[in-house]
Length: 312
Image (tube, rainbow, N blue to C red; front, side, top):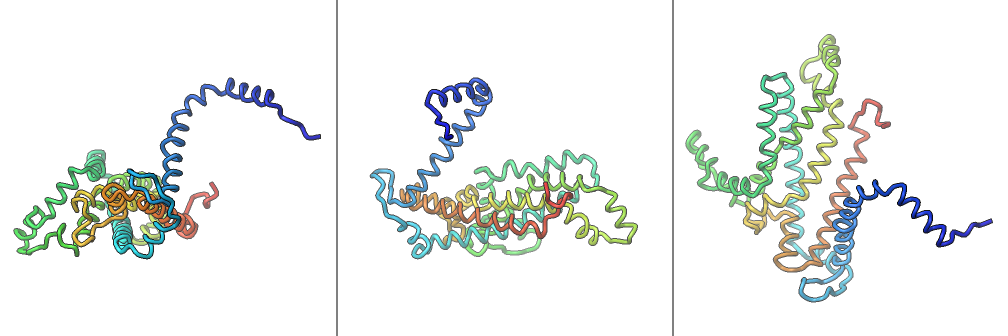
């Protein structure tokens, strides 16, 4: 026979649940408030605005999928921002991880004052995302900057303006990103220290060289750490903003060569007051990041090796 839950019984159940778990609920309350008020609420609002024409001053006007169609089919600057961002991601992430792994392997050789070197190499990660460092980077790689003075004084090379020349401007920002390799380096170093040394000793007995040991032991044993760093850096690179904004003075120039996706989104939202269009851009970026991350997770079974075979 079907039992009917009366309002009184439901109220009593909620009361008992609250009485039993009041303290955990109070500790979780800030998290629930942050999730629903600061995350889910703005996301739902942004999704609605992406189908509207909204300029912050007048009520939002429903336009259906017009923002998405204009973005993908007519807006050439949007396509340029997408091209710049994808180039930045697929160049900077491998370089940054490769550089971090090389330094981590060097530090894993048992150097003296390891803590000092680890802190020294981590400092750019703390400072590199700041506006001050981006301004300093712009001055250092300008036409009369320190880098060009060094090339001219040491080698007699007349180098271009790395920031204002559209051929090199994006790669000057890539160099700034690679310079911030500290966090990935620390994670790689922790992973290297977890590899059992008896594996290397057994390989030496079998006559394996350094290159064979690297590709047969280090890379497979370190692949979960590489996967973690790759996902984190990939997501972070798609959201890069400060460096491009400061180095290009907020224009994305020269000739839109540093027009990052987030920078163009900012221009649309807060310079042109096209909040509906900017919201649509934000959702496309979310889907793009989700798609790339899903590819990494989908292919990880073929190149990421876990000690338990990936069962945990």
